[in-house]
Length: 245
Image (cartoon, rainbow, N blue to C red):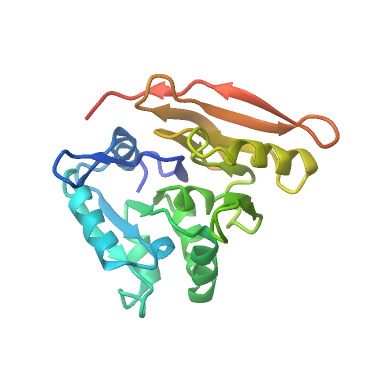
């Protein structure tokens, strides 16, 4: 659970993991920050891999990466059937739920089919820290833009809505992301919200944005708001720089 018992979400624009020099992945300082939010010396962490179709190699890489941090790691897969007998009981006993990237559209459809949307809301309300990258960041918001349907990005407007904002991920690394999010906010398809460059995470307490954090000096976060008919305004938010692990 979180250190203060309040609902926390850490939405990561990209960069949860970094190369470890041995053809593997190591956790970035963003994950250490998520761990610290739990207030536990050895937190219970469940990795949810729905957005990648619960690919076995992805699950294995997740365990290997999280093993670099002192945690009690488990995973929840939905293919070919739920990997735990009681998903609600399992998730409500976690300190941190980390949701991997991939297809946010498929993630949302399957979560709703299995009732995970309501379980995630309950876990959040009870103080389980929610985090994730890309699809695992978008899903908590009202919406954003996604490549779930192909290389040409499209709007996603049916997120879980725990956070009443739009969200932008991979904001400085994928050229379509910034202009499309601004277009969608400007025309009212999406509400105003926040966006994160690679290596940046957005930290919310309850439904309030409290700060952005990063381990890269020049990376940014952004507030994107409507600004007159059909237009949007972007304001840069300087992230707090995290120390290297």
